[in-house]
Image 1 (cartoon, rainbow, N blue to C red):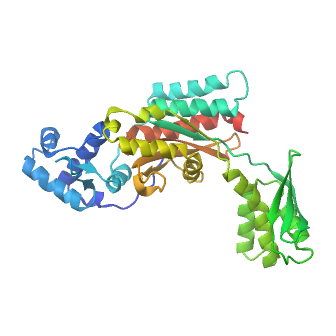
Image 2 (cartoon, rainbow, N blue to C red):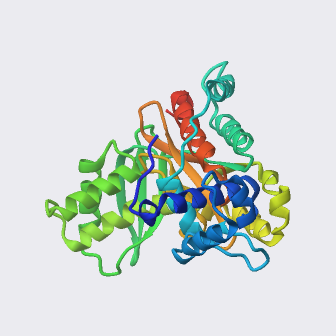
Image 3 (cartoon, helix red, strand yellow):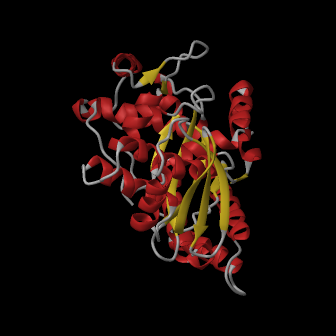
Length: 359
C-alpha cells in the first residue's frame, strides 16, 4: 500500500512543534474532543510548561493546522492539518496476522460452495469494513460492462436515431439518441462502422477512451460530424449506467457514538449524504483509477463538505486484474486513519483474490 506524499509545512516545523501537533491529532482522533495545553503538558516528553505549549499551539493555529472551537479552550486539527498529518506523519499500523486471517476467512466463507454471488460477496465486504472500522462500510457493485461486438446507428426521424448495441455475449440493447437535424447522409453508417471495426471487443469505457485517444492524436479519418455521432452513440450507455448506481452500505448505526451525539446535526447531514447513493457512487468512482487507497477529508470532497466527514476508498479487481468497483469506509474526520487505511487496502486485495465472482 502507498499514499501519495505532498510538500507541507510539517517538514518545516521544529521538533517541539511536530510533537505537540502529533499529540493534538492523536488525542482528537482517539476522543473526538479538543485537546488543551494542560493535557499536553501532562503527556508530552518535552517537559514544557503550559505557557510554552500555548505558544506552540498558537503557532500551529497560525499555520492553519489547528483550530480553536469557541466552546473549548482546547485545539482540534483542521481538515488541512489532518491531511498533512496523514501524508507526512502518520505511522501506518498494518493489519495483524489475526486480522488478515479473519478478513480472508470471512470472504472465503462466502464462496465456499462455488462462485460467489456478487451481492453476497459485496454485502459481506461492506459489513466487514463496518465492523473493522467502527464506521460505515460501503462497496460499489461492479458496473455491468458488456464487451462490444457491434454498434449500429439507425435513423428514425429528424433529430433522432436508434443506437443498437450487440454485446459479445449476444445481448442486444436499444437506445434512442438525439442527433443533429441536418446530419448528412451516410454519417450514421460511417460512425457505426468506425465503432464496430476499431473498438469491437472492448467495454464501453475502454471504447470511449480508445476512441478519444485516436481522435486526439489526429489519426482518425472521421470528420467532426461523424466524431460527434460516435460520442453520442457510446455516451448513451454510460449515462444510463451512471443513473443507476448500485451501492451497498452497512453500519450507519456506528456513526451514532457518544462523541458524535454531541454534534447531532453533523451526524444528521452525514446520514442524509449516505442516502444519496448516486452522489456517494460518484465520489467512490474517483478512486477507480487510483493505484493506492485514496483518502478524502471533509471539504476536500463536495458531498461530505457540510457534514465534515472522511472517506477512505480503494479499488478492487476481477480475476483478470481489471478494476471493477470500489470499497471503503465513511465516517467522521476523526477516523483512526493509521489503522483503517491499511485495513481498507488489504480488504480490497482480499476481495480481488476471490475474484471468481466478478469475472
